[in-house]
Image 1 (tube, one colour):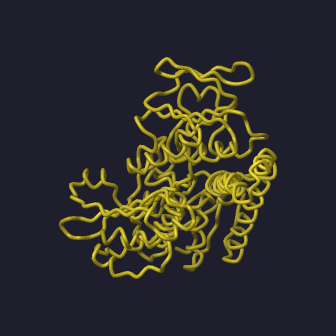
Image 2 (spheres, helix red, strand yellow):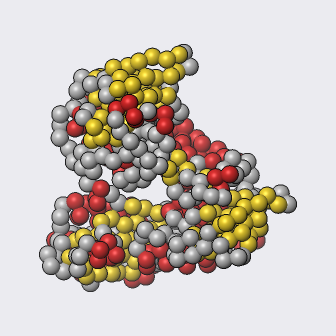
Image 3 (tube, one colour):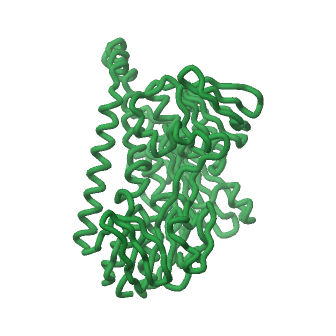
Length: 453
């Protein structure tokens, strides 16, 4: 492919552009908003900065105890400065956006700021501040991302409430917040808001929070957040939201009600493909996106769709891998995307991370597994650092001995899970994992210990 157009400069689009450029293609990247997309500007990175700040502030009582001055610790917490916390997050985001722009320029990718639409399979129309122009391409990669989803009754008040993108722009911390949705985003937001002193209610229509994750891991998060004051309302949904006394009155499906200052909708993401005019290339899309070949990411002929818009996996690192695979395929370097190898991480305290199959998924696939479990309570590093909450669980295929999945709950789980990811990618058996030597004392030792149990 000599000329490739990438539409969307988020975690799927810009890696696709860089990969295609590295393979010798002439690449144009079109982005209507900011480089980095939702993840970098109003998602993954901002939330991790805020979570880190909240978790560090949560250490003040412990530090006060060690210093024999718990009153000063309480006074310091009372002085927490939301504006300073936001400024730190914004500085990190700006630095990373600049880094992407530098990489694109170095790779000689042409960057166009504008809104793109498809005229046909080789023509893209772009509306910019200077006017409208048509660009020709031998191949196109679509990476337009997703946006917050607002079901009833929140669709009628979405301009008055927060979502997972706009919550970072709050002018001040509210006294109370109702978070609608107990998935990954909802739990992370509940964690950081409660740690900063906000009274948090989480409303989840499923019987439990984190319904897509391992049940025991989800219970660990539920118990930890409940202990810190978060109130969960599971198995119910909001039927009405009314402005009242400077805040909101929420009516739940079980007849109960809540009074909160602010509302955060964290119910999921939806895809809006209207602006792309996919009908011009004979493709139909829905709120969930478009259907692609799940391994090559091909949508039609020399057009590929990556990231949130194909509905395979709404995670930034999955989007990045998809962008790279699509670019390689367009450039004649065959590559395959493996959705089942994407690790998952939840940055609450404790963290939860998983890779491969859960017990429920293994059961659904007819794979009989044996669980091997170790606890951080017995880990030397964890005991020394007062980080004993959590465990490591590895799942072994009882027929083949292969490792098929793993879940880690505890400190630094999002980092430790990559050991499991590498083992899964290498098709290691549990017996082979037992042969790996782990440094002592480390939290990673618990993975080796689990393999031996």
